[in-house]
Structures are given as structure tokens and as C-alpha cells.
Amino acid sequence: MDAIFSLEQIRQAAKLAWKEGKQKRVWAFHAAMGSGKTTFIHALCEELGVKDSIGSPTFAIVNEYRSPLAGTIYHMDWYRLKDEEEAIQAGIEDQLYSKAVCLVEWPDKAAGLLPDDTLHIVLEVLDEGTRRIYSLQESPETLH
Image (cartoon, rainbow, N blue to C red; front, side, top):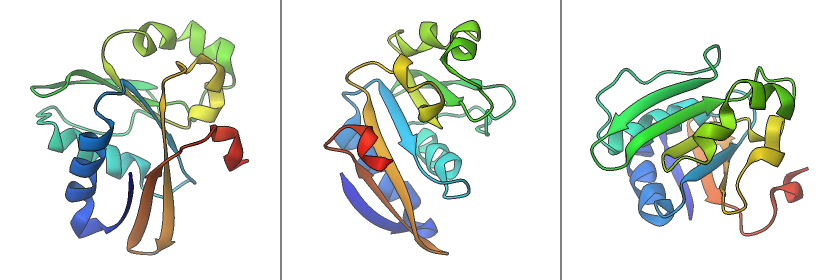
């Protein structure tokens, strides 16, 4: 997957991402602060028919949604986690290794907990109104 999109095209980008990545249960979103991770995940959840209120789980760490197309979706924001131990204490592993779709913002905070077959996605800001989204073909360590 490799797409460039504007905010007006975000739903189409989300649809493409799901088409190409739906066989993966865990998606790790790598992007800078303010690049649109939550906005993209919101569009993806809408594409999957989620009717629940979709918002940032920054303070809750995990939001749970129901999708008629994907079943249970866990939207996780690990920004506030200190380390993997805190993630384990929060019960993150149970969700990661469930059969649910897990959409993870700030995955580097507890990268060692991610399953080996995680889909790593990069979201880049090209300019104020344009983003590029692509999946990594290599290890996410290449981002650092």
C-alpha cells in the first residue's frame, strides 16, 4: 500500500488500506504528533461501518468499537504508556492476541508486545492538506 491523499480523499485511502491489509489483525501506525493518525483511524472505522462514537483513546488507552464488517475493533493509543510493563499491566496483550482488529497509535512505546505479523503503517505529512500512507516492507526499526 502506498497512497497520497487529501482530507477530502481520506475515506478512499482508508478503503484502499482495508482492502490491502484486512488479513492482518494488528495495525501499528507510525507517525509524528499531529500527522493525522486518529483522523485516519476514524475514517477507517467509518469505512468499516462503525456506528459508535469514534474518538482518540489517549486517556483511556483503548477504545472498543463494533463493526459489521470487521467485528470487534480495538483502537489503542499508547502515547501515555511509559513502557511495555505498563502496557502489560493495562491488559494490552489480551487485546493484541485476541481475534479482534487492533489499530495502534504510538506502537514504539511497547513495540515488543506487537505480534510478528503486525502490519506497520507509516503516515507522513507532505504539506498542510496532504498525507502519504504506506505499509513497511521492512522492519519498523528502519524508521529510527
